[in-house]
Image (cartoon, rainbow, N blue to C red):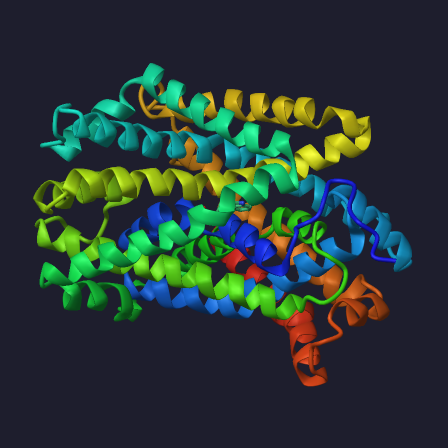
Amino acid sequence: MDKTSIHGMWSSRLMFILAATGSAVGLGNIWRFPYMASDNGGGAFVLVYLACIAIVGLPILIAEILIGRHGRVSPVNTLRGLAKESGTSRNWVAIGWLGIVAGILILSFYSVVAGWTLHYAWLYLKQLFGGAAITDPGATFTSLLSNPFELTFWHGLFMLLTVAVVALGVEHGLERAVRFLMPALFLMLLILVAYGFTTGHVGEAAAFLFRPDWSKIDGNVFLRAMGQAFFTLSLGMCAMMTYGAYLPRSGISIPRVGAAVALTDTAVALLAGMAIFPLVIAFGLDPAGGGPGLIFNSLPLAFNEMPFGIVYGLLFFGLLSVAAWTSSISLLEPATAFLVEKYGMASRKRAALSIAVLCWALGLLSVLSLNVWSDVRILDRDIMTFIEFIANDLMLPLGGMLIALFTGWALNNTILREQLSEMPEALFTAWRWLLRIVAPALVLVVLLRALA
Ligand code: TRP
């Protein structure tokens, strides 16, 4: 009765929560969130972001997981099956294709940035054994970005790590990777937050992050915040749907695990902000306008001052690489699962490798846009920022909106009720209207305003 997925199953509820949290918590929380807040007006951005998580993100997260658990296969095939079962249009399958494309685009630049963190972990490891200290973080960062060979190497290494896990499958790969690493990351963040307190700038950091300056809120802030909400929860490209497919049919309340994942993810982002901004301020850097280099330019300064700073540096960038790793596997898994279904079980390794090679090659565009092609501009953005913009800020919200509409209007009620049997009626109704009207309308307004 409890039909298992051909790709394997999570061994327990906790394992699902760890894997989904592992997917959600990543560069998005510790690298992207702080600099997005930094570039988009601090508190104003954070407030809109929190609202997007609660009103749009969580309902869609629940929808993705339930679609996955009902369908039990990769997104394209799941959506095909569900559309048929509900007697609705086959065109909804487009959500699955959109997700595959978005996942490939995101992984291409995600892996480049994860490569930076691997490189920094390596720099600290070398320091432990007497290597040169990072005395001028700005220069170190610039010199990394200006070297395409070095970037390509670390990007490639990270992609290899990602394929290795996905090729091993759900139980032997994905689960084993997240079990210890997620708690370790959490602990590390708490230590850094505590260190932030010793700088005496926690108040200013909190004011920057939490006191909204309403004049800063414009259409663009909404778009960036919405994009960030989708990105950080791994929503809109069917990654959570794929993880939901490996969930046991019964005994697990989807709204509860969804809420646990969303809360943990938000907590990690806010903690990362509270760990990073006190240091930024303490070292005389401007908390506003830090850009993608924010953590690479500011944290090494703090590590230089801290007792055992080298060990902290190693731990921090090591764990950040790991957080990126448990996320990147969820970017690769949906397309891999799809290829496995299409060409037969035996080829999981080959399936994962083919997609990864494609992402790696696409990632070279991002690598080159940081140096050789840094003058190339598409819609006012360099190539990497452009890919990021299309995938994160446009494709994810669009995918999420379609998932909301599909779940709210097209999916048969019996399926919803069966998947959400533990949910009280009033909550269920509220959730359904959020998906039917509120979330799609908000996303639409944000997309239209941004594109206008
Ligand atoms: N959520 C991850 C992060 O915050 C990134 C990520 C993993 C992702 N899987 C995803 C983003 C799927 C969008 C869609 O770093």
